[in-house]
Amino acid sequence: MKYASKTDLIEFEKTISQHWEAGNLPYLIHLSGGNEDFLIDLFENDIKEGDWIFSTHRNHHHALLAGIPAKDLEQLILAGKSMFVYSQERNFFTSSVLAGTCAIAAGVAYALKESGSEKWVWCFVGDGAEEQGHFYEAIMFVKGHDLPCMFVIEDNNRSVDSTIEERLPTKFRFEMPSCVMRNEYIATYPHAGNGTKKHIIFKDKK
Image (cartoon, rainbow, N blue to C red; front, side, top):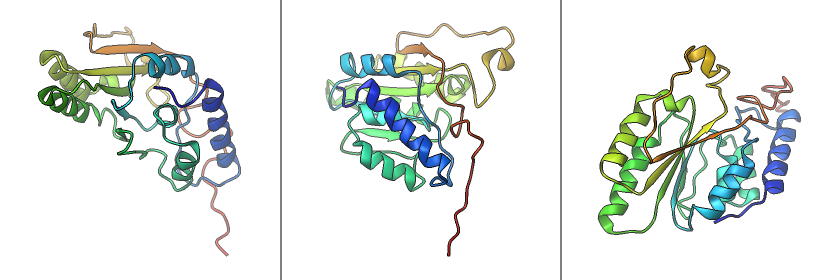
């Protein structure tokens, strides 16, 4: 399943970045970028039509690749819902809570197995969420019950603006079970905004 090309993903984020610079977004935004090749390969070769996808506050690439139309996604972002994108039709859900979807993803995977479904659950988290208890409880449940769920750590080496060296000076990481994969990449944009220092701009309401 793949509904967008690498160029589509990059150009979409450029458009959202321009909205930010023009002052059309008096809301917090988290732009995607730098992980396009990995995601395109994953959506094209592993994620199937009808699978469940749980994303994060940084969800634009996931949403486009899952089939949410670019114009619909742009309108949601302009309405201040960048971190709250969902589509029941596409089985696509997000949460702005760090590791907030992990337990939900595990529960959906349990229900799918109980019903005999061949669908899978794909739960994306960042390397900051990797350090949360919710994440470890969920992967323990998924692995222990052999559930159709894969957790994808999108590791851009920052939790907000803190690197792994700052958070954990020894760079300690647990060895992950087979229900977890990691993609290390260099992010195109800063944690929030687009790096222009043009943050919230309130337009004249007259």
